[in-house]
Length: 88
Image 1: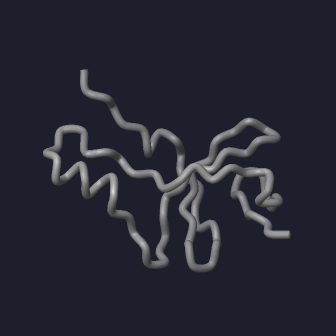
Image 2: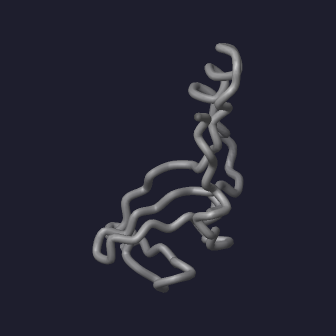
């Protein structure tokens, strides 16, 4: 069984989590070329990514920095650090 070492709730089976993807702030005031780069081009090489994970048993969201090569959780990120304002 694969385990995810969550910095907040400890080591849990990964089957308890839903992976919601990489956290990326969209380029809100951008031209079509910039938008297409944002939508279609992602990092493919192993690296450290900010990712959103949802823990179903507790109903909590977590943002973590995960090394995609080793699956090691390097840091827990406060949700306020990844929020952004939508234009009015």
